[in-house]
Amino acid sequence: MTGVSGKNKALKDAAKDLQNKLTEMEKRLWVSPDVKGIIDDRSLMAEVDAAGGPVFSTFEPPSATARTYLEQTEAAARKTFADFNKLFAEDVAAFRRKVGESKIELLSEQEAISIE
Image (cartoon, rainbow, N blue to C red):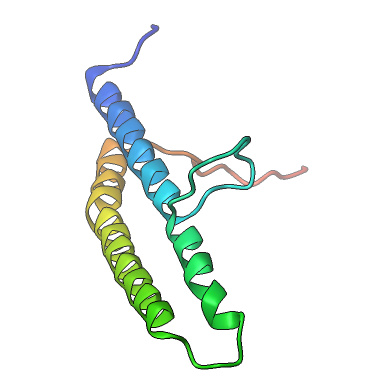
């Protein structure tokens, strides 16, 4: 029998939806070094790197501008991490429940191998 049953199709669709959400979250956090070409990196990691530049480039205390940039970066990090935590608490948890309810066995138990 080919094709996917309705129940399994729903699970497959949920997996694809979750994968898309996780990919979008990853893009908000960082840009993989595997990405080719010139990109407009607006990830949180890029913001942290940019905010740290003026702070680490001098032995003087951070300027008012540098402090403002650090505060903006902290706010962006708080928002991103809140969204990250929400994604795992809701979407990932719901998908785990769906997988558990589907009774899919990835690695079923096997009898021990014996030589008689």
